Image (cartoon, rainbow, N blue to C red):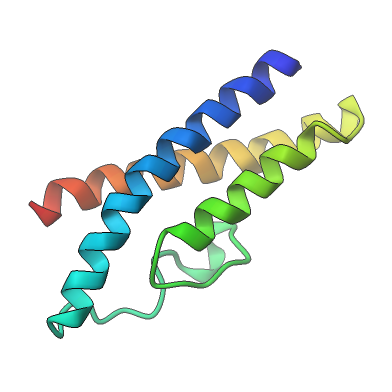
Length: 102
């Protein structure tokens, strides 16, 4: 299980690096009067965070991955699908954002 947690952590680090660039672009767009949206992800996306920037979502995800190290293995198996879904959604959204922001 430690290997799985390590892999999830590496993905969160990748997401974090991509989110820094994306948040800078979003800030510029909003400063220019563009990018008028209230949140990056819909309420049903699985995140409790609601933000116009990626960083708060990354923080939520990182905290969830860190918490995996402290829970029992059967509970870990319950949490994994949700976390993997969030990682996939974040990577897909960030990659799409990078393509369209160019």
